[in-house]
Amino acid sequence: MNATAVKDELSRYRDKVGVPAVIGAVTNADELEAIDVVGMRSRDDDTPATVDDAWHIGSCGKSLSALLYARLVESGRAQWGVPIASFFDDLTGLHPGWMDSTIDELLRCRAGVRANPTGAEMSDSHSTSLSAVDERSAATERTLSDPPKKHGEFVYSNLGYMVAGAAIDRLAEALFEDVLRTEILDPLGITSAGIGPPPLIRGHHSRLSLPGITAGRGRPAIPGDSKFADNPSLLTPAGRLHLSVPDWAKVLRVFLNNGAPLVSPETIEHLLADPDANGKGRSMSMGWADGATMGVTHGMQGSNTLWAATALLDRVNGRAALCVANDGRTRVLMSQPQLAKQLLDLA
Image 1 (cartoon, rainbow, N blue to C red):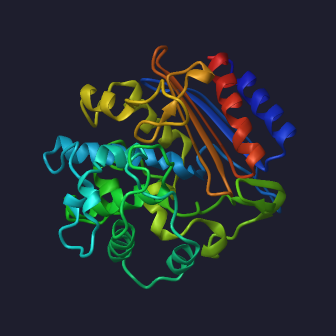
Image 2 (cartoon, rainbow, N blue to C red):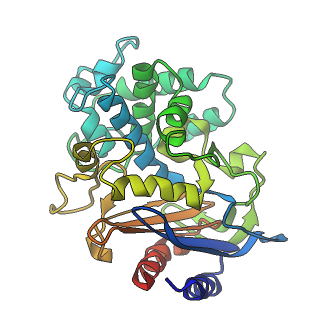
């Protein structure tokens, strides 16, 4: 693969969209075929970004949360198809309707969980003194005290993945964040991962934020300023992971290798199956969307409004492309799939 062509493609994208930095890579089932980065770690810092830097991948982390649940299934600590309410015998006041919604539906955003925490819940999470387990428990109890809404219909739900994280806390009898490391990150040799803003590169706000759209090149976020550098801790299982792109590629190779070395081929097919892929409207499998419109098998995107991340998975040709920019404007996120496809075409 022509390394110069990759850098040229990234440079064209950066010039066109105006991001501080963008990184792109293509991996096959065994190794990276190409990787490069152009731009700076921040709009107010001329330090160049590097391929070893960690980048925030936002909701692309949902695929790791689903893969983590799958690991618990394979080790006999969990099952597919069980009611959501069955995980939470320790909580009170749960609506009986949650006995009809399953973990599979939860991970496919069809369980009837509303999309996001309320504004008050988000604000409280930024300043909470609760432990991560207690915070997720309290939020789950609040969420499941109401009946499912539109059970069976697709509603993209960050809150649903928070509930899944609370279930994993209980199934593994350990903190979700720790189980993610011991079951996924460590076995894959991923050393760059962490929760929240990455340590060196700055995500960038937009100057204008309206419901469903962010626009205008804005200022960099300071990692220590938790309210403005990332979503609150409540949403960790839904997408607050950062890691280097070479390490992220290791996760993608699990899906290119039929689950090896983490899970069985049957489990990978279960994770990637979308029962309503040919139906009307939006849908997704467990952390992935159908990629047919981009000429691939699956795709995913993530953003906390300060970053934009995209992965395209081409299982037919055994390749995947990954892109991340430290700029969360809607324009950046919407244009990234085409950049990822261009990188795949170069391969």
